[in-house]
Amino acid sequence: MPSSSKLVNTSDVFELRLVHYLGEHDATSPFVVACETHVTEANAPSLLRTILEHKPALDTLFHKSKFPTDFDSSEDGIHAFSLLCVLLDRVEDGSELQEIIKVLVQAVEDYTSDEVKNSDLVEKKMKMLCALYNLRSEAREKCWILGRIFTVCVSGGNDECTLSLLPGRNSTLGTLLEKNNLETLLVQLDEGGELQQSDKRALYATASDVVGKVADLCRRKEMEKEASAADEAKQLLLLKMLSTYDTVADVDEVATDAAKHVAVGAVCFPFSLFNEQRCIMSLPPVLALEKDPETKSLFALLSIFQQGKLEDFQSFQESNPDALDKYSISSTSAKRHMRLLSLCSLATEHEEIPYDAIAKTLQVNEDDVESWVIDAVSSGLLSAKMDQLEKVVLVERCVVRKFGIEQWKILQKRVDLWKKNVRNVLEGLKQSQAGVGI
Image (cartoon, rainbow, N blue to C red; front, side, top):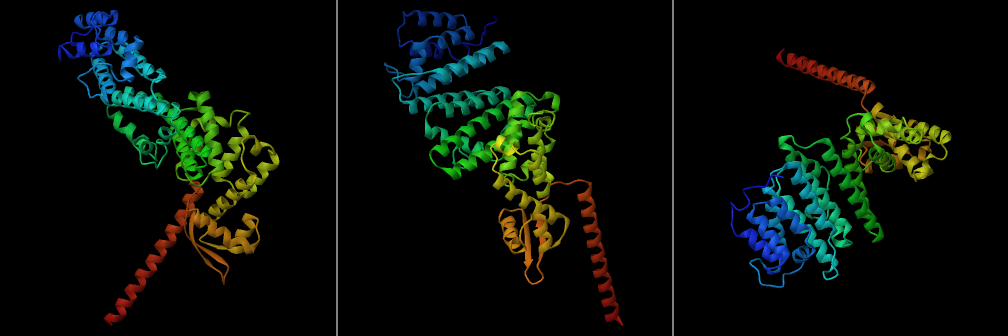
């Protein structure tokens, strides 16, 4: 394997200081002797492997050294680890570099100790991996390391560390998992076009998994509001993960499981991510659900929630009586959601809707129409006024569930009407001006 001649170019002493620090200043120990040989030979890969395979050296990284050091006593292990990360730049063979980075990260993740409090151990692991992330510049490396940081954050049994991933927690990682922030970061990392779809997919999958664990912890602590926020963040991350698949032929088992979860989420919570979920039916892993007999009914249900009405949902229930229970979907909640979605569809077709038309579409009493309109307005689905005397709902704005050729025709009619009204106003102004001139 080629070794790097750059190892001692920057400093002829820091490697030896690092070795003696990790060897507890025992100059005659086989570990120190072997490391000094690697330093002399300018063999960075062998030096790194020797250090990472020596358990006492790792103990020193995670514990305070028994001897005075040149490092800050409170952060000496982090500083020493950072120097190990610097040595990575001197590994010239690309494949060997990737292997050593994985060994380095694995050593940090797997380290255990009875002498360090679990909370302190998790914190130190996080600091080490964050140092590695900041010291690396290659996009694919940073993408992978970030995923490992997420994993360590939730796998150490430290509840406070896990909750730091909660969206809205006002923490660096929690903020990163909010809305489209992770996607924005990936765009910034990928300025050189190095990231592959598989890299993004793996990170989104890891992020969605850890946010799911955050949601579980919140429920155990009876933090229902926070659990709902985590569920919403997981749904959005899974949608982004599924968008990395270009064709149905690319869909694997992981994508299928994620697609099922996303489909169920879109049925159970159709309003919280309404705009983000409108593209769900075009995602290859979701389309693949229709081809599998096991998930064909779920695809049909999702399709109804995306563009169907209450009567379609009722027909589905008659044809698939066990489908909702199979996916733990509440029949009562699903029916309520379908009524609201049916009202949205009705509102996109008509600017003025009689109460009796709404009652018929929603299959409710006319006396209940106003409460359903208020519910739709409070859910952010539409903006409308109710004329109680004329018993008509005046639609001002409504979310669009689908936008196809029929919706284009409706839009064209409205634009034509608007143009006609404008022409009438202009004609009236001309006539008025002519009258004044006479």
